[in-house]
Every structure is written in C-alpha cells, then in structure tokens.
Length: 389
Image (cartoon, rainbow, N blue to C red; front, side):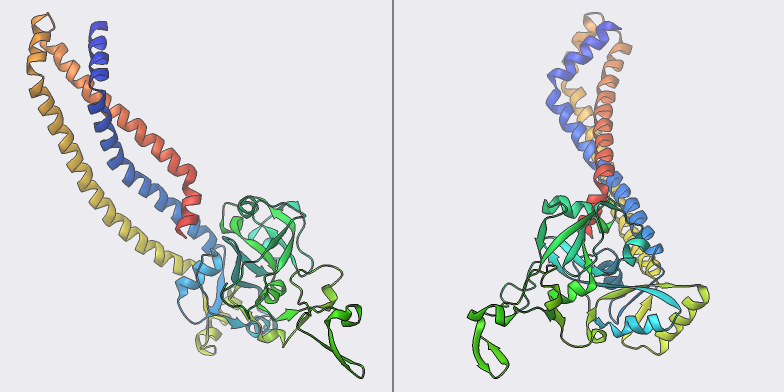
C-alpha cells in the first residue's frame, strides 16, 4: 500500500499544474452559489431583525423602500423632508412615542444622524467610552465610524459640505466627540449621532455671532445704539460652552425638516388608530410597517437568488463534465504509462486505485478551498451587507 501512496504523491507533484487548475475551477463554481446562499441568509436575518424591531415608520409620500432603507439602515439615499410639526402632532395624540431622524449630511463616509437620546434606548445601544451628547455641537460615534475616522473621545470632527460648489451654502460644523458606542453589528456602527438641533444648525437654520462691542474690527458703522457689522463678522462653525448662548434659530421649530420618525405606539389599538389616520387624513405623509416592506424586498431578492442558483448549477454541471473529460483524456494520454506500471508488477486494481486517488485528491483540494471561502464569507458577511446597502 505504501508504494501506491508513493506513486500517487509523485504523480500529484509532477502534474501539480493540472491538479491545481482543476481544483480551483471546481472550487470556484461551487463556492459562488454557497457564498450567495450564505450572504442572502445573513442579509435576510439582518434586514428582518432591524425592521421587525421598528413598529412603524413615518415619512413623506414616496418610495416606501427608500424610506425604510434610508431611515433604518442609513443608506446613502436622498429622502424627502417633512416638517417637525408632524412629530409634534404625534406627540400631542398621546398614542405613541416618537423618535425623529434627520439624515442628510456626512462626515466623510459616515452619515450624520440627527435624533434624540431616546434612539439609543430604543436600539439598546450602549456607550463604550465617554457619555451621551447633552448640548448642541456634540456627537457620539458608532464603533466602525470611530475607527474609520481615527478619532476618540475628546477629539473633534467636521461635517462634510453638502455641495462643494455652493459658496453661499451652509458652513461645515466642527463637533466635539463625547462618546463612542459599543459594536452592535448594525448600521448604527457606521453612524455619527447628534442631537437633531445640531443637524438643523448644519443645515443653516441657526447660527451664532460675535459680540460686536468686543471686536471693533467687525464694526462697519454706528447708528445710535445700533451697531452695523461688516463682512468680517464671523458665523461660528464650532459650538463651545462659551458661545453656545449666542446661537439662535431662525423660524419656528415646527417648520424645520426631518426625514423620518420611528413611531412606537403604546398598544395595538393605538397602532390601528394611527394607521387609519394616515391612510385617510394625511395625504402628504405615509405611516408604514417596515417589516412588510422588507419582507417584500426579501421575496424579490430570493426570487433573483433562486434564478441565479439555477444558472450557477448549470455552470457547475458543465464544469464537472469538463473535469470528467479532462480525466478521460488524461487516461488516454497516459496509456503507455499505465501499461508500464502493469508490466512492472502492479495489479489492475492498484492502477484503478491510483486513478481514483487522483480524482479524490482533486475533490479534497476543491472542498478545502470551498470551506475556506465559506468561512471567509461568514466572517466578512456583515461588512459585505453594509457595503451592499
């Protein structure tokens, strides 16, 4: 038996290029459908868990899918705005708790999510380092966002401008990082969270001014007790405890924008009443159940996946057929070699075992590669899902 293993080993080493090529080919066509199944299952679980934990979602009329993906998973999706008055109306109904969400700006690749501290309680997010924001101009970061931006508690980050060509647009805001969240394996890990009023400041609905009497260079002229400033008057882009009181909002808060709101009815009856109101009395807004939207999306994804698997199965069958053909041609080309092995004393059974050993080796090598691929996809699945979303 030892001589058989020796011959098999020498053969595999001599024809290593053919063995490696066949193994890689079989592994690739087998790993693709397996990886697709793993990713689709993880996506299903990821999307469903976050959607099911959100009873209702309020937004402006439009695409329900865009609203869910943009508001729950913070995808780079432009969402129409509604006024904060809709949030106040829900508060006044006494039927529900409401968590507003305003997501428009970014810090590099991380979305800035303006909300309230209730969001962290609702999502069961815990602070790993630092504290929650307590005033305007402060923010807390998800674990991935902190790593990507390379910041820690005590550092500052600056919001990215909405349009680099808009020279008359809003000023970027420098924000103090006061907390970093524990990893949650959700979209929250890549977000920058601020108070919703801070988001409105980035939008340009509030600003602060220098005290003119303390900076004579900014005074253009005096008209009695009135001071008129020149163009050097600074609009603050950094909120501190010293200048915080100088910030003021222009307009009523009820007219300020929000993208969406997480609606948490007190009970099933409250949920039914709210759904009825927004079906008949609110033509400009929609109140949806996110899990129904995600279920519809997943059904579509699985239909596409099943079609793709059928195509990949056909490719896999063709690849195996080609592999069989390669083995048959290899045996034909090695006829003289096999005859020589028989003439030096090997039995026909051992020759067959040698050929089967070659086939078995290719299958083993391909299986190892498929297993490594499956483990890799499983480990990187969450990051792949974030990238897809």
